[in-house]
Image (cartoon, rainbow, N blue to C red; front, side):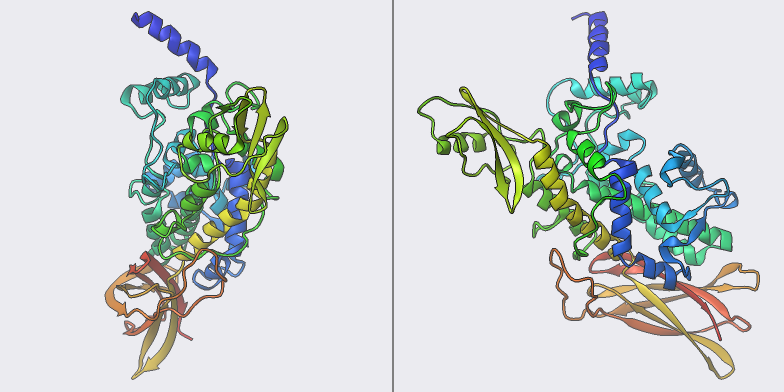
Length: 506
């Protein structure tokens, strides 16, 4: 085929493809999930005690212009300004917003621009992210993004536009170069104690909350079946019923957004506890959110293939043939009722899991709004419980300070708790002057704690905390110092942690 013909074909196909993809709709479902998960977590208590914000998640936090000195925060601020101000996620001109809305702003930023979604897929069986099947639609989709202005011609030329491949969601969440990833959260949370000025520390708190929201959003995507079954082509490219030819939301995502909006997203059923950050996504016990979603739900592109039948076909034969067509072993097709024409449903744990219909000479399998309704009602609370548990995991290290005077010198006892298993790390001490300016003292005290009896870390557990290893150490303060802050950073059985606290001698 001549080059000119290829170009023409590409432009024709571009016109047929839809626009930017999302899983949970950022401004409605995703924001609602993050809000409900945050309210069920210990974030409110952590802000009240560790950050001395008495209103907790309802406290106004400012990311002031004077604190946006790094290229990273400047880029994040520019992206914030592009969000719809009517959604409540955009700070005001002074850079202020409620703590809870900084969290949802991070969730929305994680899904915009749309090509970030390439890194929100994760197949727990292969441990891979989004990968394209053989064919040309990956290139054509990149071309569509270029023409639509989303990916840009430069992105197409350099290979950075969305070509239906991406990092795994877990790899993306823990990628050091991800400006809203796990490392960015820990650095920002530590800076809420180590920042030089009050303005710097408050900006760091807004930063940390955005990172938390973004991480919660990436995990939340693991509760959307297409994202754990490598189903971009059918769930998104072939989706129908959108607002226009450039609307590329999946049918399921669009249904959930319209059904629940933001305020109506169900609250978590409980708070899920998992043994590590990674285990919230996937683990050998198959109790990560991606594991459970993949094994319990079909997506639009992973339903069984249609089965041709004749007068001699039995329901068992149809079932066996349908199951042989599945890309994933679970869920599978169960007993079928094919005596009469019409639509029926496979019911699993009280919810409609799969629709099927016997027509003349064929049995078709598909998802419809009844399946979507039951899926959303059953699974959104579970998704929220995992996100809430992840927030607790990020905030698990608790630091408290107790002051005393000994031989004319002020001392503080730093108590550390909340660890999972054995832990070790370093406590850094910062002193604060009367103007609120903090400086490092050079005091870095290592600590370690031995593992206690293991706590239950099943799928859904009571939010009541189990006893955890703890440690304490006493530090003599420099003369004349009465107000200090500490940051504890290290590793325990669950992975990296950061804990912070501050206070003044009575």
